Image 1 (cartoon, rainbow, N blue to C red):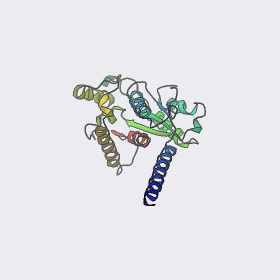
Image 2 (cartoon, rainbow, N blue to C red):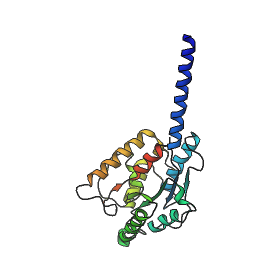
Image 3 (cartoon, rainbow, N blue to C red):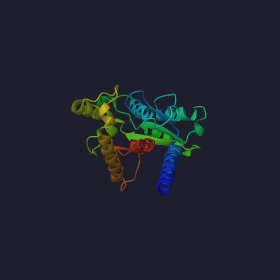
Image 4 (cartoon, rainbow, N blue to C red):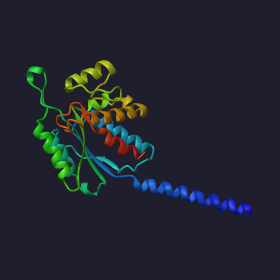
Length: 226
């Protein structure tokens, strides 16, 4: 009789364990993401996606990239909105840079106006269902730098890329493998939150808070699928 009770307890324990695993799987979200470039941020999130798939944490169709319709912030948002059945996803995200217009005399090129950037944020937020924004000011590379150090001094994208290239051997056009290190990622998340908090007294304004980023919010969401 004692042996039978023990066996029943084991069976019940196994059932509860299976139920917990099923509940966790049910909580995993389906995401669609659009990135403004085909390099740094796209390579980074593709690597995270592939790692989750490799570990069977998600199904192949759980996380997908929307076809990019342009590099300016408004078209990145549009990339999600024009994806077939985008409403069916649990989460809709865009990853965009502030990428402020640089004066030619300072050696800068490209970039987008504050109006373009803010318009994209507004369109994403006001859309039903909402499209969430993971932004980086001045660019995605501030998220890269935060893996190594807390940095709160204004910087433009050229200076930031130069700093990473010279100090860390970073290359924008290649996947930077150290970013996938869990300890470095944890450091980046901590530094990113600290950086955003430092702007609270002046007011959180993604367009003008240089440097700042909330990329950690999307990364933490993806980590929940692991």
